[in-house]
Amino acid sequence: MISGGLGTTSILSSAGKPYPEIMVRLLDDGDRQVPQGEVGEICVRGPLVMAGYLKQPALTAEVLRNGCLHTGDMAYRDERGFFFIVDRKKDMVISGGFNVYPKEVEDVLPAHPAVSAAAVIGVPDSRWGEAVKAIVVRRPGIDVSAAELSSYVKAHKGAVAAPRTVDFVEQLPLPVLGKPDKKALRAPYWEGQTRAVG
Image (cartoon, rainbow, N blue to C red; front, side):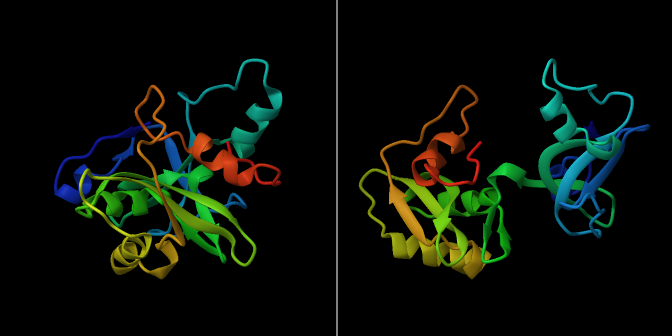
């Protein structure tokens, strides 16, 4: 739905620009367009957009609101019109009213010499609603503390994105696509809570 672009490195990291006859807008939770440079959900209208899910009218109504396909991808658009995806909407952590995109934290953590792999999720927090949690696989023979990793993220992404807690594991659950299974990682923390973990 979004064509690739050529040019500088930053453009190459983008999702590109819309194809002709495809309208792409970035909308907030009230289906209002967000200003350029701000993050919103990618919503698409055009002849290639699906008609709906087979025998799932409720899900179809949810994703095809106001004549647009709500993709669940969160992105921003730069001044040249290129779209940059930051994360999936369902993975976003809302902590103390601030939006934290786990992918941004996951991009920072593996740059630390002690981190082999990392996944970031939101977990219940009585004060902030949700708190950022990192699940980390350490490199063999290299030790690192949770506090050090939290400080490392804080230095690169700011205090809001810094994990409040870090769990160390031997490996992350990786389904067929090779990305950490966020649903499985969130499930133990959200059991019995009202928030969906899908």
